[in-house]
Image (cartoon, rainbow, N blue to C red):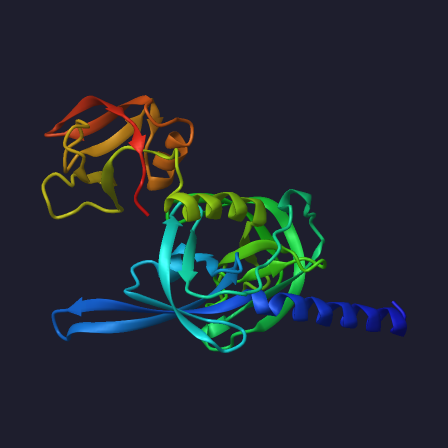
Length: 311
């Protein structure tokens, strides 16, 4: 590349930064905690977000705001607003915030299906929770990466752009200044660099529209239980071996607290990701047969799937 071509790249990149910076915000959270030693106390967190609409809808990651008692958003201009949660989705790790503002600069969402490995991108966010407006560059390293995070399997873009804690919820933009993805994960380790992931813009578009309109993603089936994954035998007698245990359930679905789920429709269940994979093949109203271990023996329970409305 000759000197004039290199200069052109620098100028174009600066123009893209000028175009995208007003659309990226800093997100700050406070979460109340209770300790036997210290009583009630507050922990602070930080992340990033991307403006979706001129009237104040903002997308971020669910894990950035999960459990927060208060959320504040700081614009690139320095203005700070209190934010309300419009809705969130654990399956895609997306959440939508709403601030009382007007005349904001929303990001233009790309058609992420057209993105290619090797496309140049920039990441804009708030690394370390204190460096808002930071820009890093890289490429799309791969498309359609299936990554499992906290039991949820997601199809993500992989990028080599440098991201750090605090970048979560920030924007990944292409050379046209369009949002191609929302940064949500980084593989970490002493020998790992340049390995980060983002929720594709097409997923962001679909999910955020649902969250804005309904507060949750409609049509998602659920068993109607809360469950925990035990990785080693527990102290309670019914925690006889590692597995997925029902903690609580809807009164009419036939499952009971302490049930260990063995399989669903014949698919062995070893973790929460296995339950998610089975539910992805079904719709609200479908019936599934669940084999559980209960009171020293196996039992089969038929459960009708209901719609998941919680965030």
